[in-house]
Image (cartoon, rainbow, N blue to C red):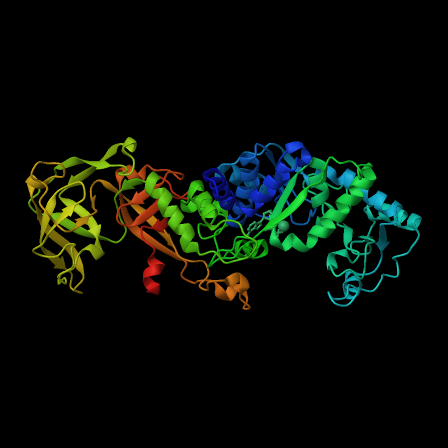
Length: 571
Ligand code: ATP
Ligand code: MG
């Protein structure tokens, strides 16, 4: 093999299977080299990280092959859709960092779809069935036994045409009739057994109001919309594999109607399926996410424990970390459960580069520097981000009375405790080396104050300040900090795969998924940070101001700890 060939194979190997298929089509000259994808959300909920996987694929393919990706709202079921969802979907896609070419709505095609349905009836490919949904379901058969033909299957075309018109009137009774494609009741693919393609719904549509009363089903809208728009690659998730033959079959009909069946322009969308993203300790089903919101198990769609993009944004995840995570898990043909620890690792990795380092004490105890002058203070320089010099510095005020973490002190410490304990030295980050001299307890024996003496010659950055001390502690000055509430989150569910569990998902909710620290102290500089600004509370983790935060009541969300706390527990 030549070096060149070798490189070529290497490149091929690093392509996802979807990219390989797209490249094959390009090599064959299909669609004149045009690449067009779409992301087709149904506006019946908020986007979650599973959708992000589809978004990265749909937009990624268009970007990589100089094509376009449109957004299409698959809004064919007015009973669950609304504009609030449309707005938030747009916002979330932009936040993730993608730009659509056009925004389309399946509802823009209601007229065209109606005409197609009428053509289907006229050509003897569809009929009105007046049986109940139960009767129709009973006649479907099983994958190994053929279905039973509806008594209405061979009704006159004119009768079906008339009834189809009636279906689309306010007088039509929901469930009284449906339009079915007349395909093959014995086909081993159940989707071919005369699928329902239109049904009656009277709930007003978020865009077309009460104009329509008969609405197309997914299988009679999705592929058709792809075709109308000129989509070349219709990329979706694996559950649509069994729908693909029907998808192709209905496109054949559309091309027959258009008279383009024998045209060699290949103007036909190609459906390609990849595996869904499933995350441990959460659910992706919109039905379940709706239930969590409606039953107030969470504070809303953007609760930081939710797998939604707005929840992750509020929690402090960056769009880059989500995209990197999706890249790392890749696209395959096999469904799997993805470990949320990988997502958290991607978040840490990205926030390490971005977050501004600040000081905050979550579980405070007073530390008095007994030899520091009363009433005095000084400004210490703090580096915003050691990973990025360009982020600069800020100042943190040091004084006699400080807050430190209760866990950072032990009266009788084991030898390897390199934090604060009587007789030992530690460095206070960005400030001085201090030596603990003792502590004060209340009548219950609780430590209420720790005392230490500082070495004025040991200020960070000073010559001769490099004396080796094992521990460095974070702190805030009691007179130069602000009180804050900190919300710490744990897994929303306590079982690894709640989506696949037979028990009711309500029983699987982790009762301790939210822990609120009411009495935290943050340095002044952190108090001014807004939602959207990435923070690292030094030695603790990554944090972000919550939209609930105000000047009089600061609130921060813990995005993720510095290390994987669960990995430790499991060991
Ligand atoms: P439902 O159909 O139950 O309302 P859905 O999750 O399929 O929910 P859609 O709005 O229809 O939601 O999804 C839009 C696109 O996102 C589809 O192409 C779908 O395949 C993709 N998608 C949804 N969930 C995931 C997931 N967990 N992983 C990858 N892609 C997903
Ligand atoms: Mg769907």
